[in-house]
Image (cartoon, rainbow, N blue to C red; front, side, top):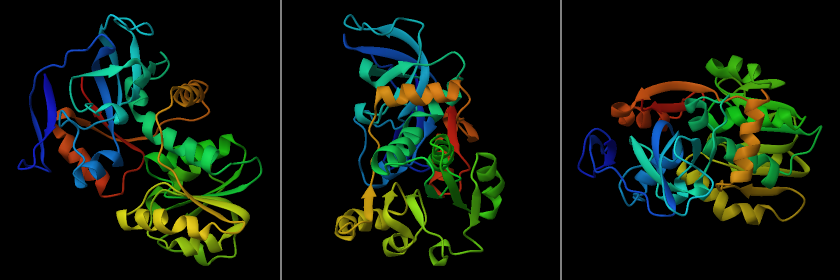
Length: 312
């Protein structure tokens, strides 16, 4: 099969499009013919930190069809359309085929395309678990989404509105219209205004990216407010992990989230997409042999939604 394989000496971006052996499922796995896979920060950050999958193939969020099912598989059959997050199961999505255990996948609803299915898992789960579980979002709250234009941010804006809150999105001027169209009540253009110096106070702040100091975020929280760090530069992430607990003494809480694959949550999100409550925003599509270009584009930090690799 064709796949994009990590090679430390390879070019471009150490990712090589080549032929590899088609994987064979165990009795507890299915073989999925991949139709679409999305690119996530987890891919290029893992590569940058030297956390290389066993098969040297990145790509976590997949959507495709079951081609073979192991003897112990009970939830899926050949021909089922499935989707899921393989980050905890060895990645492998930047390829024509991948093997996966049952617990990594759910049935893809017919109303959701393969591209939409691939766009959903990691980014939408991150947004949901950040604002609902870590952020304890409540109806009527004032919510600030810093980095509202990317994959996680576009889901966060929509989910915050689903939970009936007042949403302010922070993004560049090129993405202001998109953020508004997703339901944000207010949009702050960070190139023109420093929201950390305004008089506004927020019950919940979700920081997807941006280089703002953690102390600045704490300042604009309401009493009992919650800040949730989802992403940003690697130094910024480490600062939040190191000092967030220290700054959480008192009523204001500074938290971080690392999304965990959860079938129940993913099924909840797919139902929201089916019902038209939220929608995946797809910025760009690439062919499998252009995966290195897709990774480079996403790592630059200017994607307007999700970046998809189409493998048909």
